[in-house]
Image 1: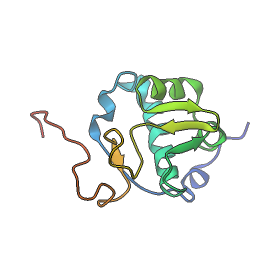
Image 2: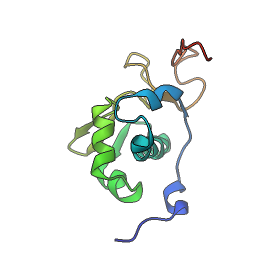
Image 3: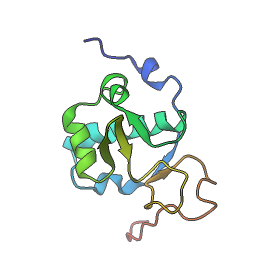
Image 4: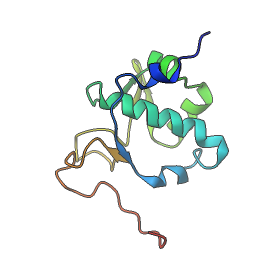
Amino acid sequence: MRLPDQAEILKGMGTFDFHSDIHELDGLRGPEGLAAVGLFMSTGAWTGSHGRTGIVPRDFAVGTAGGDQDSIDRLIRAGLWEEIPEGYRMLRGPHSDPDLPMPLWRYTDDDLGDRIFAMDDTPNN
């Protein structure tokens, strides 16, 4: 199997802001969670330029984005993804519906109508 190069992965991707607390979610902490976080970031950016639906096709997650089953399972256990027939639905963003659960990122500053998209009350901020 040929792995995609970086140019292929980045082609057509959007951008988004993400909340730093993603690294504190169960299953995503420490070195063992880095691949899952990377998959979350690359697929989130991809959905940003492909309709902002929050749907990640299975062939993109596993093929182009290079996700493995362990990373996918970690995202599901962390509550960020759920499996659907088409692939995966991102549960806590990106979406444009402010009534859905707090997203961990947004596409632009006005996605939530100027509402705060996340609050972090840890003392180091």
